[in-house]
Amino acid sequence: MNASIVAGSAARTAIGGRAAEQLRTVLRIDGWSTAVFGVVLLAAGRPFVEVLGLPLAWSVPFGVAMLGGAAALGLIAGYPAVPVRYTALVVTGNALSCVALVVLVFAGPIPLTGPGTAFLLSGAVVVAVYAGLEFLALRRAMAR
View 1 (cartoon, rainbow, N blue to C red):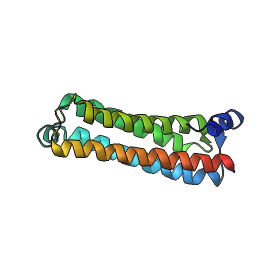
View 2 (view 1 turned 120 degrees about the vertical axis):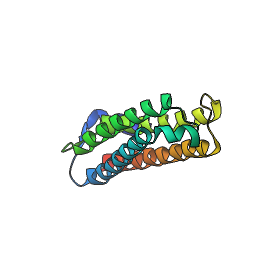
View 3 (view 1 turned 45 degrees about the horizontal axis):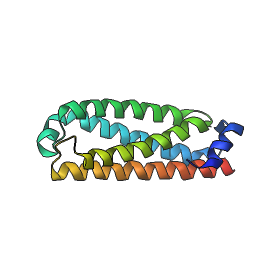
View 4 (view 1 turned 135 degrees about the vertical axis):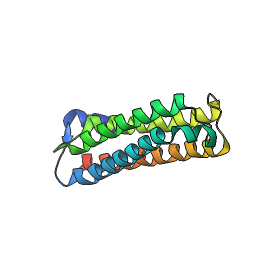
């Protein structure tokens, strides 16, 4: 996390007006795609066992967590002034999720198939992109 954002968040707890719109848009897109991904994990859990090697014991909790995360993203994006602290937590959570997905692939606790490995690694890339976009939007909004 950039020190200027952490230091700036003490002085400014929320961002409003035009500066928040780009950040709000990225948070909403992240929220909707997270919700879709969570629904897919829950609805297609059984087929994922064979195709991806992702056991139901993993896909169901991941799906539920994704829906919870999507709801949190929607709430944060819906504030009249976007809370800096919560947005910084979103960036941190996305970065940690990216690392966790990569660790799951390479540490081997899940018997993934080739498509399963590609699925989780592509998820890591998507989460990293969201973390980067949210970080940049937050930084721009803080600068205004």
